[in-house]
Amino acid sequence: MTGMSARTTAAPTTAPSGAPAGTPKIGLRERKKIQTRQAIRRAAYRLFDEQGYDATPVDRIAEAADVSPSTVFRYFPTKEDIVLTDEYDPLIEAAIRARPADESPLRAIRHAFLESLRAICEDPQERADLSARARLLRDVPAVRARSMESMSATGRILAGVLAERTGRPVDDLELRIFTGAVLGAFQEATMHWGEHDQQGELLDVVERTLDVLERGLTL
Amino acid sequence: MTGMSARTTAAPTTAPSGAPAGTPKIGLRERKKIQTRQAIRRAAYRLFDEQGYDATPVDRIAEAADVSPSTVFRYFPTKEDIVLTDEYDPLIEAAIRARPADESPLRAIRHAFLESLRAICEDPQERADLSARARLLRDVPAVRARSMESMSATGRILAGVLAERTGRPVDDLELRIFTGAVLGAFQEATMHWGEHDQQGELLDVVERTLDVLERGLTL
DNA sequence: CATCTTTTGCGAGTTACTGTCACTTGATAG
DNA sequence: CTATCAAGTGACAGTAACTCGCAAAAGATG
Image (cartoon, rainbow over all chains, first blue to last red; front, side, top):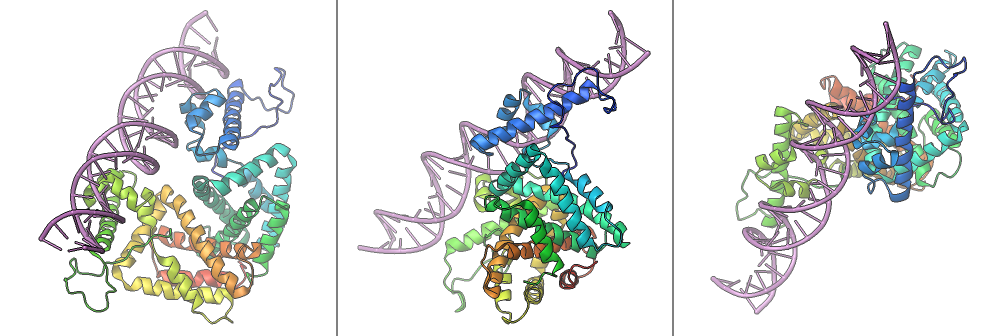
């Protein structure tokens, strides 16, 4: 959500030299970069889990990932970003675009979010990360704070897609109010989920969130 | 919104010894505290305006306010809090409580917010602060980030009041989705206002925000 | 192999905090 | 008015998250 890229979880540690046809020629350099990024993130998640976020200096993460501290900062501009980096935004954007044009914005968002989330949850690794992230989001104020930037980035993307859909200008006040409401609702909902030990499926939470929104915010 | 207190702008620099009846006996100590707090905040706002937020170390603020750096941190736990501290939450809470019980949550919120905002804007000093804050919120990511904590504090208060009103438990998922949506909408709306040089009355922005919410988030 | 570019590590510096302790200053009882 | 107590303040030392510049290492390319 912060506009970084990360991939993988795919290749089983080492790619054989004779790359199969599908790979569009990816150099060793980029592969190493991805590997390093992943190593840092893994090390961080593990250490955060073991000894807590605040008690884990970046230096120690670097050590565990076997890179220098400066390298960590080269990959992640802030410590919080190690936690928050994901690449869901383009997924969601694509999913909304794929919805029929005559669908209402809220319905399109509902289906798009559900589909994206389902896709993400298929990968058990990704699912575990999601869970860990929710825990950190619950426990660490700094992470929570920084997550706001992520959210507003998502908001801009959402506004962009909806602008096309509705013919409104991207910076329309009403449009931004709309996206703000939707994302604010999600934020609180996932927070609630995290605070209650993640009981129940996140998918259900998404559904209930959109129920409230579509029902017109009547309590 | 962060749960701190601040007051004044009132007394014309020096309170005469024979305090008039109205004052409920306030010691010199507390008066000084308020004064110091105000001095720090004033100095900070001025310096931020002159040379920018990031370019103004806390030490310089302390210097300008004629206190030690440690004192600054005693009054404001973080640099961002110098900007974000306000005492609007209790105002809003009281305003909502004052609304008739049969009014819908959204209508109650509308009137409460409008009344509170009107009250705040009466004081020109307060109005200027609001404006400066909006500018910093627009320009400084760190401030924006920290404002999320404020918002979730406001959210908890809002949830508390609405729980009473609707008979729902305070931690009800639907209730939290509701408050999330409302505050998210406001956040984006005021952001929009700030990004567009604060043109138009903030009151109108509040109205339009609630229009969108009450209309049921149809775009 | 030689060269160019990207990535990495190192070291020094800045700044936002945190904690401790001694000192000052407003409140208060006699 | 003075002695005493509590609260607020400042100086100091320490930690950790960054930032910057530079030189060495490693992948890409002809």
